[in-house]
Image (cartoon, rainbow, N blue to C red; front, side):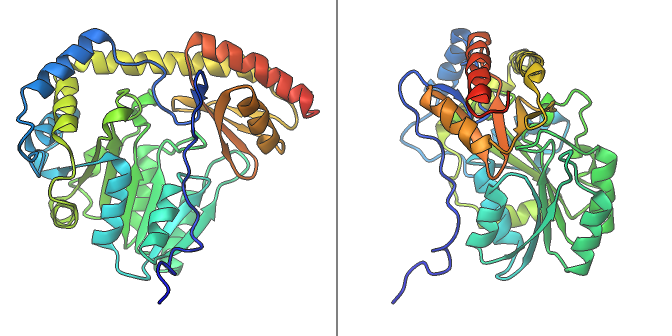
Length: 354
C-alpha cells in the first residue's frame, strides 16, 4: 500500500530556521515585543484560568470581545488556531473533493497548499507587472471555470498591494461561489478598505482576521473567520472541539480589553514600515524595483532575488524569497533596518545590479 500519494508531490511550506542573533525580517511579525505592562495584563488573565479544564470550545467570550472591537455580531465569528487553521476548515467544510479553487499569483502560498491537500483543482490568475490584478478577469475566469471558491489576501501578502472594498464587492456580488477575503494586513491600510460591513449582505463572503500582524501577538496563533451564520455553522461543525487554547483565549481577551494598546502598536508598525520604504527606495535600479505597500513590509522585484536572499542570509539577515523574482522584507527596528540597508547595498554591488 502507498500512503500519502495525493500529497507526495505537493509543495511544502518551510519557515526559516533562525540562528542566534539573526535579524528576522521574513515572517511579517511585529518588530516589537509586547511591553511588560501589557504582558502582565495578559499573564493576569491567563492565571485566572483553570488549567485542568478544557477551554471553551466556542471561545464565546473571545469572539464576543472581537465582535465588539470590529462592530460585528458574535454569531458571525469563529476563532481559530491562527488563520491557517481557518483556511483548512474552510476547505474541508465548504468544498468537496475536486472542487475548483481560484487563487491569484503572487499571493499567500498556503491557499494553494490547503486546496491541494483536500484534492481540489487550483486555478491561477496572474497579476500584472505592477502587482495588481484585473477584477473583471477574476470574475470571468471564475464563471467560465465554474469555480467553487475564490480566495485572496487584501492587502496582499507578498505584494503589499490591495483592491478597494468596492472592487472586492464587485467580485463578491458577481460570482456564484464562495469568496474569502483574507484581511490579515488590513489594519495597516490607513484607507481601511475592509469588507466586514458586507458580511450580512452576501452569504458567499468569508473574511479572515489575525492577531499575528498589527496586534503583535504571533506567538499565540489566534485567527478569526467572519461570515454569515450559515457558513459559521459549517465552520463550527468542521473545526476541532477545543481548537483555541485557554492561554490564547485569555491573551486575546486581555488585548481586546486594551484597545489603546492595539491601536498604538499598529501605528508604530506603520511608521516603521514607512521609514523602511523611504530608506530602501533610493536603492532602486532597472533590475531592482521597490514597491510601497499597505502592509508592514516592502516588496522588491529583481531577477537577482535568490542571490540577494542568499547574500543577506550569509550575513545573518533573513528576508522572504518568493520564486522567481520577489523579496518580501518586513519592517524591523530602526537599527535592524539600518543594518539591512547597508547589507542590501553590498548585495546589489555583489550581484552587479549597482
